[in-house]
Length: 309
Image (tube, helix red, strand yellow):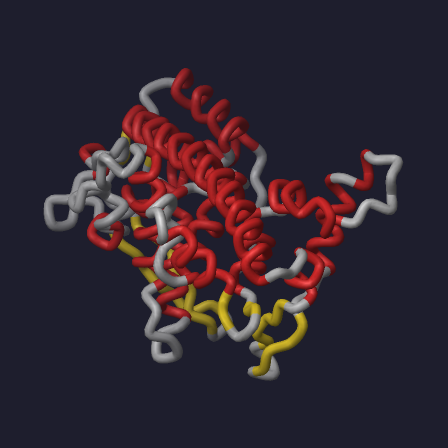
């Protein structure tokens, strides 16, 4: 179904009628306009997954389409209050995952220093002998360096008169400036029939310095979380994508994508508190399915969901 872009006044009317939002005054409507301009409609109304009471389906041109029901009125002040709590949590997790990224890169540089010395090789040999798995051919192929070269050029060569600088000679700097996603690709690659992630994991395990998870998909999901939050994606949308991926991959994969995303948030939450505090098992994050599209069902009440975990 084609999405219609509304002007702000029409959008507020749409929210009031379609989402069953109860405004007490025009002042509240104005506050919502300001919120939408500042935080984006899709982020604020990711909360619809918590204040919707159910969903309905209809056939449109032979295609089944789903939409939500909002049988219970939601006071605007409750919507605003809950979103500001969600925003505060997202800011906390975003800051923590960025620090996590920085610390991982720092440890990875020391790992490389140690590994290259033990192997008696240089970074040029290491990076040029990595292999990555090609899912189209189901075989390993030479690791693609294009993205590394692009990021190096964008971050360093664009600001340096020394255009001849080889990133292999400055790999400590390279690791610092590479995106988290590109670091993830290096960790997912193989060197001498061993996954770099596993080599790095074993290095960290020696002194229990830092946790990257036991398998690569744990770290991969944290990278997705980081990128989502840094592009101002709602935590609810982050979890919802996991829920929908489970439906899409049903019968094709045994992975629980929603659980992986819940665990990623949990891990960064615990990292935020230096692992001295765990995410409560009763939190909405760990019980996403309980609260999803269930306002007024089984005692669920949107207003009473403890968003600020």
